[in-house]
Amino acid sequence: METLHVHSQKLTTKHYFWLVISMITISMTFLSYFNAALSGITMFIGITVMVCIFLFTTKIFTAPSVSFTLTFMHCQFHSRYGGWITTWRNITQIGNVTLASQEWHTALPWIGIRLKSYDDFINTICPRVASRILLEQRILLVMVIKQGNHPHHQLEDILFDDSPFITQDGKQLLGLQAMLANRMRYNRELLGFDFFISDDVIDRPVNDFIGLLRRYKAAA
Image (cartoon, rainbow, N blue to C red; front, side, top):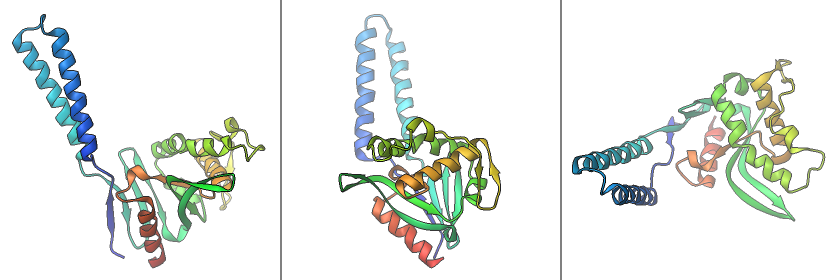
């Protein structure tokens, strides 16, 4: 399979609309409040600054950014905080994340990844990304525990469990690495996957991206 660079979603027309509305509202409020007290030059400078802020914000959000690189050997995630990487051979399952409630399964806007071994993934992940995974993906555990189907788990005990973790290779993990490994262990027990990919960092619907990942894995 050819190397593929996946770009995160850019601003849509809806986003531009709300940005423009917000800037107009702020500008009108500024003008109506300070109209009597400010000179024409000061008002012009204020409006110019607001326009520059709008253009700068738009440039940041529309700048092309690669969120994933898919090759015949591995899947790699990129962000401004760092990234993670895992080989296709280390992935055992890729699928939809669902929340079970009274025999109904509700699909969530996340993609689940299950690994054979945690060792390489945890050893190579950027610490800042590991921290963000712990913070941003905790909502999934919260939703599962709130269902009340797992009385042997207390939410405050599993969200940031930093107890030492022994890997399959016999290595002891401590601190942030142990916290991430324990989180992945709880994720697997309660949700069936080790970690997750949010739909806001991919360029297509969740099911389409799952299919893409599975094709690359099958070809590896």
